[in-house]
Structures are given as structure tokens and as C-alpha cells.
Image 1: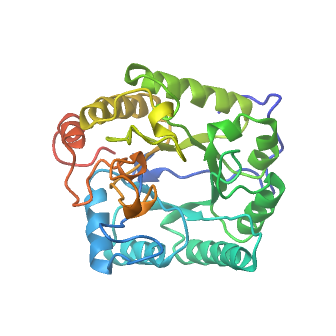
Image 2: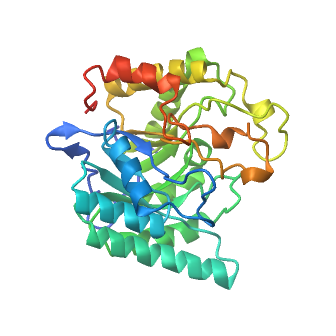
Length: 332
């Protein structure tokens, strides 16, 4: 926690709510983004079965005890119900996806997300440890960008109806702007996204760059805890893609299983040393992303997982398992 400075605001009503990152006496801040969509499945298409979700949860729980969900959906409902029913050693940061609300359909969807997040947080109070209202909703390149004032209203509504800490997740290029300060003032902690790979960094400097951005945002929002909500390294990219994402120009470093292995080694060592709550993006490759089947299979958005779509650990993660999970147990 940094001392108060120019970026500090008064705590939200009732003071800052702490984010509890302990389970059975162990720190669980080394987490992962969880999305159980398999080949041919997507949020707007075929859904994973309950058995598939449970299988994924059991697999993930061997290596992480904190997962992040991005929206209220039937999959999120099943995920929370299964964790509860099976007594899985998992805690959840639950997402509510927020859109601009320009159409009746978007406004209805926002209402369903907010109401659903409140309902699930109340029902699974012992599992949902925080709520994330909006994902990359204010950064200037967002395709679902909202105004800070609108997002603040959503955060306040959710926070006023639950007991868990509440935040919003965004790219560091929003959190480093003055307009982010009133948003942070309504949050119990700041959830920060940053990718060395997307920002043209060499692999050798991946975590040094990450650490420097983390320190900058922590100082900018003095008085607010900061956690890393997304960071990772893709194993593939489309070298011809110059449209949305521009991965052929923005990514300067190698994207391969070998590169991901070196990144993961840096990532795990850094999180272990600094105890900064960090969610790796992500557990599984997801072919529906980056435009789905209509796009090149090499598009980076499809290849951030440390497991492939068949739930096989990539060689990068197998090496990390040997190094950081030498007994086969979890790394709490």
C-alpha cells in the first residue's frame, strides 16, 4: 500500500473492503482466468456441459485456487454451483460485463449483468471474493467503451448491494490517465491489465516492464491496492494481421511455446517474490476468440492458454509444473 498522494481519493462509503486472498491459511493470489469453452463452443453458441465445466475446474484447482470469470452467464452460474457442490478449493472474482447501453438490448443486458452479479455474490458469499464491474470498458481502444461517469454508476449500484469488494478491470493505458482517478475512488482495489507482448517488449524484459508499470499505477492511485487482472504470453500470432489487434506490428517478440515457457518462468518467480495478486491469462486456448473460425487459426487471441483446447498442458506449462510444482501439489 502506497502513501496518499496526488492520486488519492477518499475511500468509498464504509471504507475500503479488503480482498481476502487466503484459503486454509495459504495465500492464493497467483490465479488464472477461467473460460471453459472448448472446440466448437462459444459464449453465444454451443455451451460446455456441466461435466466439462467440472472437469476443467478440477484440472485448474490442481494449480491455482483463484479464478476470474468475466460475465454473468449460464456458464458462470454452473461454475459457481459446481465449486459449491463439489467443495472445490477455489475462490472467484466474478465479472459483470458492461456495454455502452446505446440500444434497448444493451441496456437490458447491462441490467441482467448487474442484477445477476449481485444475486450470485449473495448466494455464493463464501466463494465470490470480489466483483469486477466492466472489463476494459474505458480504455480508448475498447470496442464497448463507456464513459467513466456511467461506469461509476454501475460500480456504485453493485457495491451498494453486496458485502464483497468491488472493482473494474482495465488496461494500464486507462489507469494512467487522470479520468481514471474518479473511477478508482469508487473501487476497493484497482484491477490492472498489462501485456509486455502487446506492448512491444522483448521477452527478456517481460516482468521488469510489468513490474515498472505496476509501480507506476500503484503510485498514480496511491491509497488503493492494485492487483494484476490480466497478463500472459501467447504461443502463436498471425504475422499478416494488420487489422483489429495489429498483432503483426504491435508484437515484437517471439510467440511460441518456448517463449511462453520462459515468460511463465519469469511470471511465477516474480509473483512468488513480490506477492502481487496476479491473474494469468489464461488457462485454456479458446478458438472462438479473435473472430472465430472465420479468421486465421494463428490469431493470437486463440493462443494465450497454458493448456490447449484438448486440455493438454503445453510443453511450456509442463516445464513450469516440474519447476514450481515439483511434488505434483498446488503452489499455494
